[in-house]
Length: 399
Image (cartoon, rainbow, N blue to C red):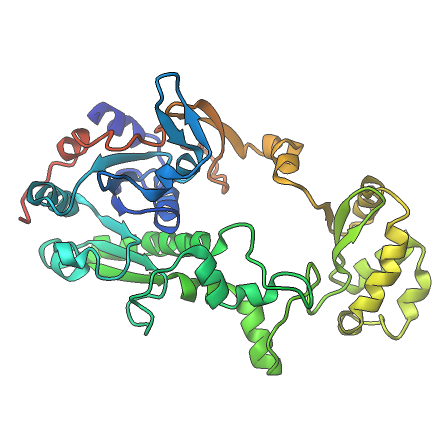
């Protein structure tokens, strides 16, 4: 165990040696923990005897003897270790408190107050453990009137306004197909932890991070909030179109859809030349970006009539040749089997319990001199319950 830990710390990764205790379940907390682990941190996941809820999410790999392992769980829990602790059991709780003493970072995404009830809140731990970064991800944060409410991704997508601008004009509200509220909150959490590390290590002062999913989604919606404040008009659903740019949306070729993003006057001229609609360059309805955005429905109709005459591949080749940003509307099968992920090194294989060697998307920001970290498989439930207390043996107790 200790040899494995030393090997993991000898790679030159920026967070090597950082000890992170993760009380994470489902997605936002575990995703933040995985980002820290990918950068070299020793992330220990504290799970109840029932385990993280996501362990029960399909699809599952299944062995001949009946053991199962969730691919969903594996996707956000690589490079971690897992211990099992029943916080209602006095002995287990004491062991977890000792691990808290050895951690530099505690990351959790339970409802506000949950860990406080076990004496594992920020105030109690920081009083006995100077230099602790304690990061709480929740739906609404500690000061919101909704602080006590539970929140899953879809709830935050709805509450944040995201669903009001997702979907077709005049259609029903639509949830984004990717759980962006969870992912964005996880990104903000991990980013803030890393940003605080130098000052906390220097000062020894503990810091608390209150990271609400709702606030993170609003922060990520900067264009929409600025549009509302700038115009007094609430943004609306536009399908794949853009409120301030055109043509900047999906079109149907003769075989399948593709996207054009002509976000400047020169690019617009290239689109007109490619489609043979040169008369539109001087059409007063489309003479400027603002005019095209205002009249984009009429513009889309004119372009669609032409785009439907050739295949998507033909249009993409022609537009790309002219420097116009464009791309196919891929399925995940299309993009994962395509040349981009393989050429860039984004796709690798991870050893997953039960499933064996399994494709995975590695940490996407590539750093010169470093390889992607894949030295620890997503852990079985409680796999490291014995090892971690030995590796993290504290110098004192906080019983």
